[in-house]
Length: 344
Image 1 (tube, rainbow, N blue to C red):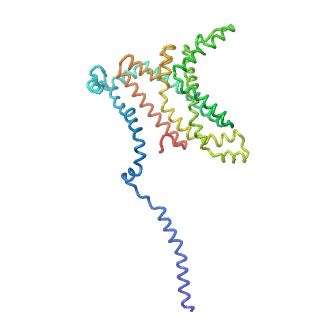
Image 2: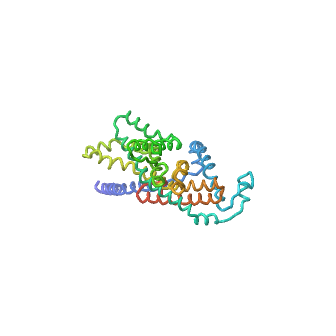
Image 3: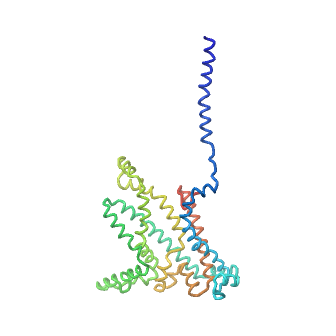
């Protein structure tokens, strides 16, 4: 009996000692096993419905965004649209000038004046306009009554649906030489003011018009981000003794940070586009020295003066700079720990 007991106990001890290692190794091998790659045919069959749904949008982007890129060849030509009724034939038969248009642009003081005005307007709108939708979203989010909140949203983003002609007409009636404020000043013995034709305040006027028209519309994205914040976070912060400002700083703003980073990257990429229609309507009132930006510069030279190659070269320079700004801003967002426009 004793002789038969020893092997059985040894076997049990060996089995007991080896079982965790064997099971652990099997579990580890299952966890470390790479996933099998799915072929593109299987992925296509699996996602064919989604691909069909996105096909119209992809076609629109190709037709209206990517195919026109081929027209950038005009920047390297002395383009003459009257060579043929077909625009493609005109591009093929126009004289090739190489980099001559770019040399003329970089030597043109009017181009650099347009660049300066564009950058000044961008920085003004980035500092004075970009934070306002965030502040409005925080303010509306703190309103308790749903009806008051809905009414506030409707009032704030209603001007977004107004055309720039109507917006400028409203500002003309308020701040023009015969506007409401000028009449009030004259009635009280002061000189009237005409902000609409003052080149020194034109950039602030443009920023104020943009704020009044589009700030309310911008709060929609931030309110959508705030709606995804769990109320438990606010309750936990309140139980820890955090007041309203502490909850806003430690709960609300961190929830908005990814959206703020994304919109900031997009805004930096759109830095050289500061409102073509808005500025073109008011360009003659203050003169091109104060109101000329890159978009109006391209339009004036390409459409009005019919120097299409010169204008296309200016537009191409603008596009390349904008692309560089997007990549740089997205890199900064990655360094800050945010996703930005695309992941690493």
